[in-house]
Length: 206
Image (cartoon, rainbow, N blue to C red):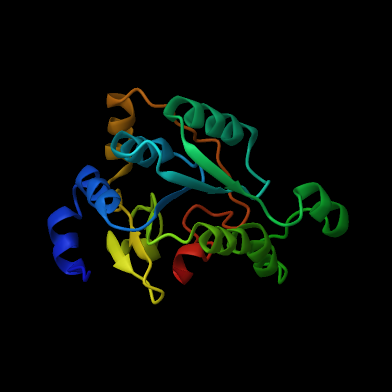
C-alpha cells in the first residue's frame, strides 16, 4: 500500500488526534516511544484513547531524575500503558564503577556514551518490536532540526515515523493536560543531550 505522505501531512498534520487515529489504523505493528519528559502524557493519552494496547517503548538510560521515574510510574499506572523498558547492556552502577560519571558534551567520550545508553537500546528495541509505524512526541519547538521535520515521514528502511504533536506549542500541550487532568513532569534531564535545544542523534538517524 502506497501512502501519499504530502497529502497526509497537509490534511492531518495539524490535527494530532486525527493523525493518531490514522497511524493506529495502518496495517502492521505500531509502537510509541516515550522518555517521560515534560508533556509526554499528551501523546500517551491520545494513543491509549484509540488503542489501549499500543506498545509503548521507553529507553531508560539509568540517568533519569527521581521525579521522572515517579512520573513514569504514575502515567503508566493511570493510563495502564503496555510498556516495555529497554536498558543499556551495562547498568549505570557498572558503567560508573569502571568509567566514572557521564562525560560532558565536549568530552570525546560523549558520543560513545550516547551510543551505549540511548542509541544501542533503541536499535535493539526496533529489532525486537519490528514496527511498521513509529509514533513519537517530537515537537518543532524543541530544536532547529525538528522544526524542519514533517509530521509524517518514511525512512530508508520503510519505517513510517509519525509525530502527531509536531506543530503544537507548549501552550497547546499544557491545555490538553488540563482538559484531561493529566500529570506532568518538568524535573527532567537527559545526559545525552544536556542542553534543551541539542539533539542526541536518535531522531537524526531515523
